[in-house]
Every structure is written in C-alpha cells, then in structure tokens.
Image (spheres, helix red, strand yellow):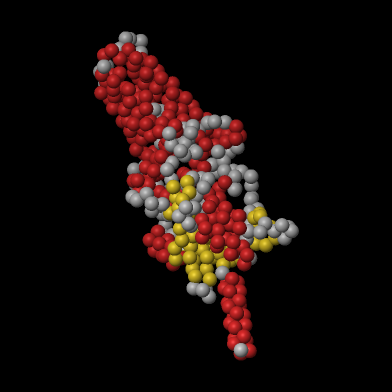
Length: 414
C-alpha cells in the first residue's frame, strides 16, 4: 500500500514537471512574409502568429488572411463590393513556410515574443476560441483590419500591461496611403492604376506610425523595438530574438516596361490631338461617331467609380473626385449625338464636360505641387485629391474634345 502511494506521488510529480517544462518551452512568434507581386493581394506581405513547443512536437501557425473567394476574378469582384469576409485558421507551420519560400519565393522573418507562461497560455486559449466556426469570420478592411492588425490586437489583449511601440513620429513625412500603394505597386503599374481609380480622397491623408502598422513588414520593424510595460511600470522587450528563417534572392521586375498607363494614355492623347486637328483643318464633322465612343468609355469607367463611391462598403472610396472625369452621365452622349431632338442639349453637355475636367486638372496640379512642397497642411486641412499621373492625359483629352466642339459648334444650334 505504501509502495503504491509512493509510485502515485512520483507519477504525479513527473506529470507536473512535464507540464512545467512544456509551458516553459512553449513560445509565440510573429512571422512575417515579405512582399510579393505574384498576386495583387500579396503585394504588402503577410503576418501570422506561430506557436511552438519542441517537447510536445507542436509547431502551428495562426493566419488571419484566409478567404474562400475562389479565383482572382471573383476575389477582386467581392473586394470591390466590400464583401471581404476573411477568416482565421491554423495549420502546421512547415506548410505555411514552404508556401512562402518555395511558391511565393519571398523572405520569411521571425520575431520570438518575450511572453510569460501565463501570457502564452492566455494567447493560446484566445486564438483557439477565435478559430471556432462561430468566431472565425471577420469583415476585412485593407487599411484598418487585416492580417497584420488582427495578431497585434490579439497580443495586446492577452499581455499583462501595455505595449510601448516607441513610435518615431506622430505623422510620417510624405507618406500617405496613396504613396504607400504606389510604392508597393511600382513593379505592377496596371494594378496601381486600377487601384488609383477605385480609391478616393481619404487615402491622401498621411499615415501615423501606428496606422502604418497595417503593413506587415513595417509592423515587424515596430515590434522589434517595442517594450511591454506591466502595471508596476516595469519594462521588458517585446521581442527576444529576431531573425530570418528564409531570405529570398528573387528580384521584382517591371511588368510591360513599355506598356505602362503613362505611356499608353499619353500616346492616346497625342492621337486624339492629331485626329481633332485633322478634322478641324478639313472642317469635317467627326463628333457624332467619335465622341459617342469617346465619352461612352469614360461613362463605363464612371459606373465603376459611382458604384464604389455610393454603394460599396469600403471606407476609403468616398469621396472620389475621379468622378469629375469618369462619370456615368457620359453614357448619354451617344443618345444626344444620334437623336435629333436631344442635340440642342449637347452645348450644355460639352460645357459641363469642359468645366468638370478643368476642375479636376486644377485639383491635380495644386495637390501635386502641395505634395512636392512636403506641406502637411494639405493632408490635414484640405479635401483635395491627388491623381495618378496617367490621369493627366485622360483629363486633357476630355478638355480637348469638349473645347474643340464648343469652339466649332457652341455658337450654333446643333
């Protein structure tokens, strides 16, 4: 009887010791996948939380970037609508690592977090609860609630105290959301052009260091210098160890080097100048067929801008002053050009087109000058919107066509 009691106590002691050893060896890490331009939604990189315990052979990663939209076309469609329901899910770390290093061919960086056993256990339980079917889906917001901000929020809730990120500046000089997008999409000019059409004036606001933590790589850099401050004011570094698990040597290459939006639309502008000058010289009427097609294209783009501004659920698409030259009203042009009873309205339609394009051009020039002057007043106290450089020839083309018609026909009854 006494021997059995001793064996029981020894077994109990060994069990307690094994759990203690396991708890001491359990650690969380912030894992960051660097940027890739393989897909439009991976151009900013990716963040995830890794939990590892060698003694228990546990090595999993929690990922807040899962979605089930299928192909990229459907993904982009749902993204435009604002129906971006993402999920959190866990998987073996090696699977995530192989996807990043072999398929995406990007660098993978790990920051081992300096958490106590209690904080590790609390974070582990919180992530498991968050992964339950009834909790796992969340409404993704590109700048405000994404795969980087979610792990940060989970960590902040589970530590004893607060995190001092040692933000370097209240506002990053010359770093707006729009400039951040352009920098990340510098090797994919058409992706950048499409994004600039969709997003409006709010992305011209400068980001604070805190807001910029939506960007995974930047958040990793901030974590590396951060400290945990407990309720007594004691400090400890948030990160124990920071290292690369894989460093990629793949370099991004420009897509369509001689087929960028800037080149394409300036060439189109020159062709429109030549066409307009030729028909004006010959005093021939070209506006019926040419302007019907010309303004219809602007009108089709206007449907997209209008839809995003007034129907989409996204937070950074209204107001969007691209609607000054991409307007669904321009779809009425073929009707006014081809239906005799509507032709008298052309004078007012061309005048409207010229004035709105002139306002857009003035806004583009003023905003670009202000940004070049590095004046933060622009982003804090004005509602001006900066435009993609390729919008200049688009705006000038509209002013040319409307101005030409007003000069030739404006004083006559069409």
